[in-house]
Length: 214
Ligand code: GRF
Image (cartoon, rainbow, N blue to C red; front, side, top):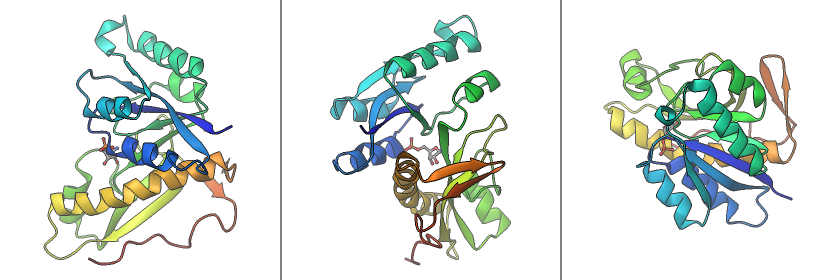
């Protein structure tokens, strides 16, 4: 049976789409079972519906507190038989209770080469810092935002004259490859967590995933 994914979104959902698209291949070892959004108007919900995937809107303000909201998410994920929760542009911090309930079964994609540039506005900050390479990271989630064992990274060169928008577009292209790759590695049982690091079984990932200079 394929690994059942629960995808948490707040917006556009292009990474959700990348996972949906990957799973159209019957040989892909995972499938999106449930999409949960904290916003009723998240465009990603329409992507899920178009693919015939179950969706759920759980708005924090409809619950007594954060614990109740997260308990509802966990209940829905469990009843959908979810084995891996994927954050894909989910713009709320998760509590230690939720993170430990899903420990090592909860991953995130972040638009920088962590541990550089955790947080928001990563592309602007990378350009301001003058880094030559930027990229994205798929990692297991820990309580502190944008930390946790790194599963896959993809790097892109920062061109002279890059703008936050042009750099974001180049990184996003890599995100859409990196996220399905990381999920596949996990679904194939090739990823183990050892302390602060994720270990990927030999031969599973190329030495470096670097996008060619455009
Ligand atoms: C992506 O850049 C992702 O790395 C970050 O939020 C953005 C979500 O985009 N966490 P999308 O909703 O998947 O299109």
